[in-house]
Image (cartoon, rainbow, N blue to C red; front, side):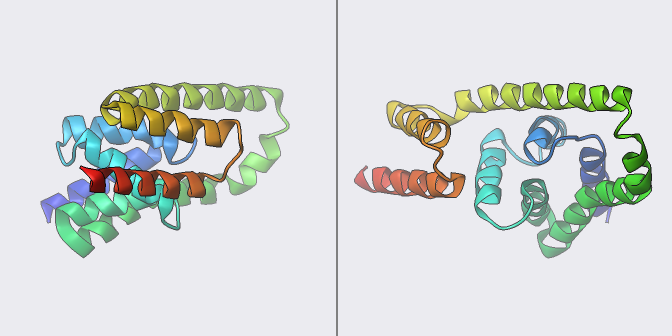
Length: 176
């Protein structure tokens, strides 16, 4: 029961202090789940994010569900999922009417602009850290560069790029 409470509390805290969506949660997930709790590894977090990107739903919720399942099967998956979404539900309900009144306020608009900038910096920091662990050889580097080119320059759908990278990894792995 203590593990379940710990799962809920950890994901509640992550959900409470993260702005900017699933990718913005990466630094908190890495710090809490890998470094502090030792529930998972950097590589598993990357795998969970990859799978979460390919499956329906919100990435952060999918990752919470995967971690919960890893630790306590179905019950853990449910508890972690409820933990990560509860803060958002509470905040949205509490602020739904208030936020519409103050969004025209220039101070509030500037505050949100600052938050958006910090979220981009957080994501960039984690991506650079993950790159060092994910791109370990020439093939992986080539897949990274090609995927980035497809996404940025060619505007190819992320789903297509993820599937193509999975196929490339599968084919390359089969040759070894």
